[in-house]
Image (cartoon, rainbow, N blue to C red; front, side, top):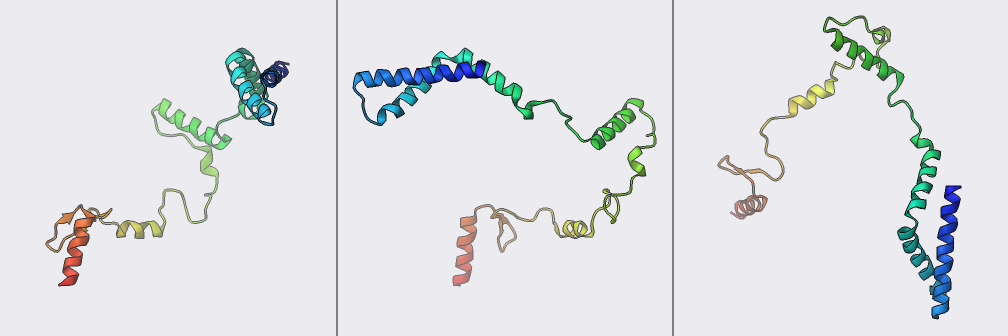
Length: 157
């Protein structure tokens, strides 16, 4: 009912704006566009209480706003298990998830894949990045334009 009242009041404001604009002398299709804009502005200023009531009705009907569990039952069970370990302060009891088979036949989540080892071996700390260039004398330059200029000079020689 509150939503219907708000809609009817907005329509009445738009029609009143159209009547006023017609009385002033506006007679073309611009009358309706102007009436809609004026009606929207006036209803925004005047119908704040009714708008809040209509928004509340829509929010109550929105299925996305209904209370629902935040996590899956498995995640909730894992969280309860971890909380029990922290609260007890002792060695962990038997975890129900330990009876389950691993998700992947390759092993558990703690094991790293061979590709990950290869990537780690390739990474070298201190390698210049983001336009850092190493000059012939071994110093790192932070200005890409200067490095490019020096490279051109070397190529010209």
